[in-house]
Amino acid sequence: MPSLSGKTFVAMGEDLAAYGFPGGHPFDRFRHAAFAQGLENADLLSEIVVTEPARALPEDLYSFHTREYVSLVQEKSLTGQGYLDDGDTPAFLGVYEAAATVAGTALDLLERVLSTEHTNAFLPIGGLHHARRDSASGFCVFNDCGIVIEKLFQKGFRRVAYIDIDAHHGDGVYYSFEGNPHLIFADLHEGGIYPGTGSSTETGAGEAKGKKLNIPVPAGARDEVFFHEWQKIENFVDAQHPDFLLLQCGCDSIAGDPITSLSFTFAAHQYAAERLKALAEKHCHGRLIAFGGGGYNKKNISIVWPKVVSALTSHADPLTT
Image (cartoon, rainbow, N blue to C red; front, side, top):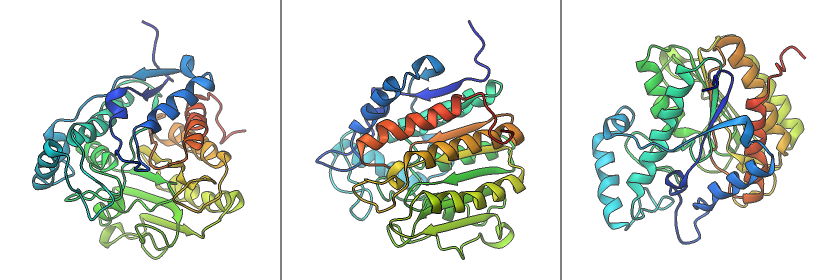
């Protein structure tokens, strides 16, 4: 079997696509198909290692979520009735299995990256950054990012960096680790929209003060704003000397998304992935996992996330060119 060193793992499969809400909901299961078609159109399948979805065990979910909340999702999954939050995240038949598959696939990618030299990974249906420890929120049932962060801490990592460029603030990650100095947090998002958090004054609490960076930008912000603010993120993360990198690259910050108002182009996400790949090589032996996150314009999905994958597969080091 050829060596997997230096490869990019990308998780795809129908069990992963099953995380999508019915009835015309913007987060539907066809987002996975848009990404898969875009990956094929970009001629990237020969450059990656495609992995199958995996389902998390309840014990995996308990590392981040309360047992009571996990039980609630299991119950709602049997009937498919009602909501898991105040009205954004409806239950559907099999929602527990679908959400547990997102979390389990994230953990599977983590194990692959940790066991293979200089590899990274991309999880298109993931980055469910709004889910709180005891509740769903904003289309997010189980917080796969938070579960991966907890697993890294269990494994002894002490400088995990989480970078989020989704249009919406990653509140479920921020508040769950607001006082934890081992999570380096940087989030660039559209100010004034859901969930209404992520002020620039929110820089962490207690011994984690100064370990968090929130950058709200105005509606309509274009690439020049992104690249200007991105340098702050890059400098901030670089100075912390992280030992693992996580990127939530929701493409709802790209122009044309139906529920947000930022106007970044495809270049923003590709650049962010390139720069973080270089930082991962500098500090983390290449260890980086990117999560798809939000994004509800399927054309954008089909172009942006393949560009992220392309950046992850690149052998060039943009810090030295």
